Image (cartoon, rainbow, N blue to C red; front, top):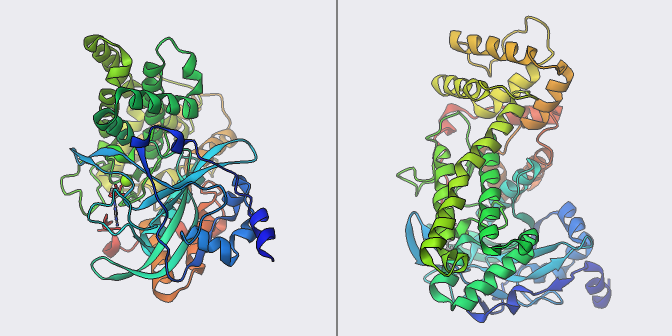
Length: 497
Ligand code: AMP
Ligand code: MG
């Protein structure tokens, strides 16, 4: 294929609206070239959705671009400035190892950020090398695509390219660059940065830009900045409810890792919970459990309060009024979260209508699961598969075999009988609300090990294939529902990525 043809064929269609914002918000710079780029994995379906030709992306010239050796046509690379509360402490951060190439305008007219993660140092790198290791970039690829398969708003992964250069962590690791696709990379920390280091016009420009890009309906509101805050609160309440419903633990919910768009971002020390326990923490650096599974809703509320603080000057010219508006908006989070989560739990239990006692029915099940150490995903999977089974099914080994659980099950079955839905409908609702499989830690590790140590990507591809539709309940998925050996249960994730 000749050079011109492949440029035409790839289908990049960049705009660079973020780079037209006030200059304090970013630094223009080029990626630092790498020695020997090689394509490791490419997301064909996502490429197609972006209007990109996957075959063209696989050519040597285009792989060079995904590694930062040269730029795709129309790209205008920048590192974005942001700040953030990390484990509660406020710091100046910014893209220390990421470069935004621009926004791909898709054939459907969507505007999506294209970002390289790991392309070398930037003005915000502080002591870091600006690079990323292959394992963590493949991990982000797997988990973000698993989240997408689960129907949870998330940044996506288009490609991982290995660089042919080692990165130095505790040991030498193979280096890699991830191409990340996002609705935007505007974070709570971006607003904290603008409020702290920008002029008042800069904060306003960022808020107007965010409204245009993510909350255009709110542009008509009497107080558009209040409508922005309310919109973000609502989307985050919905997002966190979705995480909780599938047992996802983000692991590092710093304010710089929370988006205004309502997408999950920054897959570092994240993981899915096996046995149900609200205290579950995987991250090796989260020694005090700040970001434990059960803490995620209050932490999200805390982060949103930091966003509200940053927005105060825009909410009202009188500070006391602005504070009142912010407090009222933040006050809605808890109830919104509760109602999104309860609606999701009703669906997980096959309930179409609402009854007063549904919440206690849910809590009783969870508390029984916690007492008996039941696996979160497999409990709901077994309940789903039990619907419509014979009158006296042999008890699934995934379900607790305790008197309390049996009593709960009878109560639930009586509750199901009080609604009009037929078992087949209940089963369908439960099947699309309870994933048959999640990206279990031992399976993710197995895929990464084969890729990193043997250069064998077949394990990774099989895992990605079954995670594409986790609600399929296919026979290929059955072995992925098998729990890890007890020895690998003390799983830890590491942030040193
Ligand atoms: P993260 O934990 O990935 O959310 O990153 C937190 C901050 O540290 C962000 O500002 C990153 O850009 C920065 N950072 C993480 N790793 C590196 C690295 N290897 N080099 C430079 N900056 C980094
Ligand atoms: Mg981050």
